[in-house]
Image (cartoon, rainbow, N blue to C red):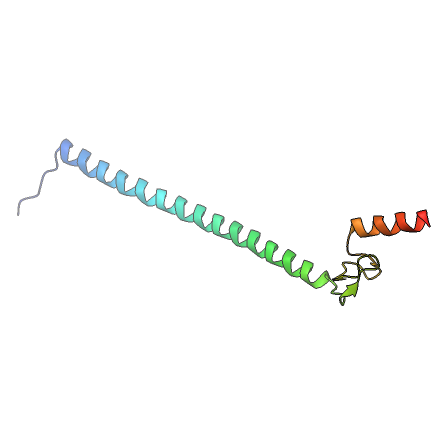
Amino acid sequence: MSAHAFTARDLDYELRKYLRREVSRRRHEILDAEDATRAKHDRTIFELAEQDELRKLGRRVHHPPRTCKTCRRSFTPKRSDARFCGAACKQRNFRGRRAA
């Protein structure tokens, strides 16, 4: 039975092969960990954005359409006590009352 004698060159080759494989494995572990962290971070950002949108939608109050006191056009008020469709009609009404 003859034993295979490893030369220094064989050992150097095997060591380099092992080190390349080990470095590659560790690199992949690090990249996988970074991807997992990034995915968790992205998921958290999207969840927060979605919660914020739902909260905004829940806070909105929808008022029935009204008629503007100045121009007599129908509009949907943003506030429950709105009487005019916009700033121009509000100003026109004020100036008309002031002149009278």
